[in-house]
Amino acid sequence: MIKPIVIAVCALIVLAVALYAMHIGSIDKTNPTIVTFAEPMHVIGIEINTSDREIYKDVGRAAAIFNEAKSQNPIPNLKHPWERVFISKDYDEGAQTFKYIVGDVVTQCDMIPEGFSYYEIPAITYAVFTIKPKSRIAWGVTMGRMKRYIYTQWLPQSGYRASEMLNDFELHDDRSLGKKPEISLFVALK
Image 1: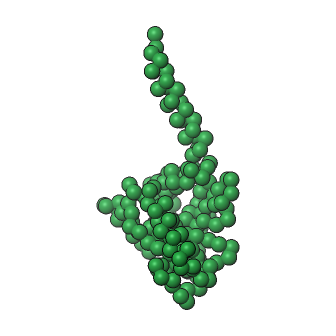
Image 2: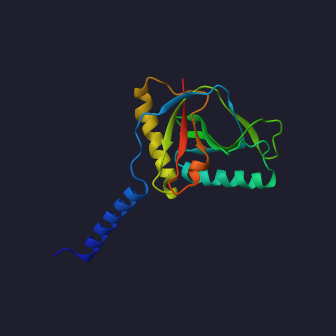
Image 3: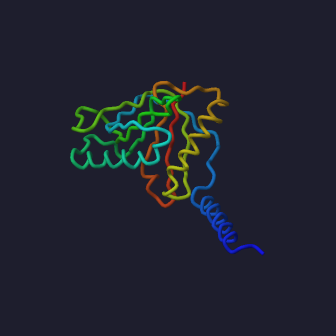
């Protein structure tokens, strides 16, 4: 006779798998759109150092730091409609660390408010992937799975190489706010 504890554990495993599929689902492995920026994108934001292991908790911390600084020192010349970027750059494969930047896209940068820095997303070629998590709580896991796919499978087979200028950036705009959120992930190429 099967013990009730075994049945309960099996039921929890089935429930966990079902919730995972419901809230996260599979990643979209369709080919990206390849775009080349004619001009750089201007960003005012903040920067933190993080790692592959810590990024899931550091995203929220970086966004909180950015939002707090922005509430005290508004950013001028915001692009309309609004766009916020989350940039990953200077990845160190050995240490698995990188710089993570949260910022707003601006039309021009004639003044940098206190507590912020200026960043430029270069006018180079990017592979643009659309990320569509099944729910807002699945952003981090979906993004991690997509980046793993891009850097370990898609990029090595694409005929492109990763740029040393910048790793990638997420572009958040009105599409990221709805019930079926989506963002664009730009992977820098050369």
